[in-house]
Structures are given as C-alpha cells and as structure tokens.
Image (tube, rainbow, N blue to C red; front, side, top):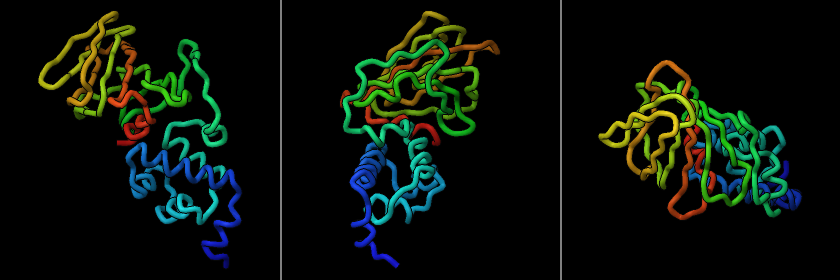
Length: 209
C-alpha cells in the first residue's frame, strides 16, 4: 500500500492545482468538510485527503463538487486564465438551480461562469416560493426588480407589495423573503453583491440550507 507521501509524489501538477482550488472554494464558501460531505455525498475523510494532496480526485467526484460550488467543470481546468469580460444570456436561459434546498425556490443564475465578478444576478420564479418560508439574511446588498406579475417582499417588520416595474434596493444583512401575491406567475431579477465588492461564489452556501 502506498503511503500518503508516495501518493503526493504521484499526483500530477494539474491534480495538485485542482486540490488547491478546492481548498480555496471551500474557504470562500465558509464550509466545513462535514458540511461539504453532506452536500456532495463524498466522505469527509476522502475530501480531507484530496485537499491535503493525499489522494487524487476523479472526474465524477469533481463534478459533484462543481455542482455544490455552482461552478462549471471548466473552472478547474482554466482557473488561471483570464475570464470573459462579458456573459451574454438569452431570454429564458441561465443555470437553473433551486435556492435553499429541495423545498426552496427556483432561480436562473445569469453570470455564475464569470470569474472575479462583483455581483450575482439571477432571475427568481417567485411562484415556487413557499409562504411559510423562513426569513433569511446574508452579508451584502441586494437589488430586486419585478419583471412580471406581483409579489410581496418582507424586509424586517415591513411588507412591500410589488408589481411589474417596481424595484427595491436593501441591506441583505437584515432578514427578508419574497412570496407570490397571487396564484399567477411572477418573475423578479435579483442582484446580490458583497461588502468587499468581489463576489466569491457564496451563492453555493444558499443552495442547500
């Protein structure tokens, strides 16, 4: 059986680079190995060995981590390359995910492949939001614009009735949530940014809470 030292020596430069990227992603998302294990189904001991250059990671397992961090697989292979200065997304397109777990709300990420972005724009299908959903808070600011339909935005102790064309900018550090105002479709554009003016991919932290 090979020792950990021997395993490290057998890792290719690319495998070592990916391991370092995984460490950075986990720290940027403020996740413990245990939390990451729950999200991916990969054992905590295995994840630790990968991050510490004691084991290589296969494509299928890397795909699970990419999904957990909401990044494309290409992120791990061109991470040092200069990312595109623009991202064009056709109407109705974008990366479809469910915010806050299986019982959460459907959203379409519009710029998740842009590296070093300062904000995270996404379209929310408000009709998928539960009226009994808990209020949530996250560091930074948020801007919401109602594309179509009607919804209610609860912000602290206030409730804002919003219709198509309405918008609101607020400190997302205070508890808030959005819900449909009727049974009709409602889409909103939400843009989230962090206080340090660089978005580090913390969207992944919201996906399975």
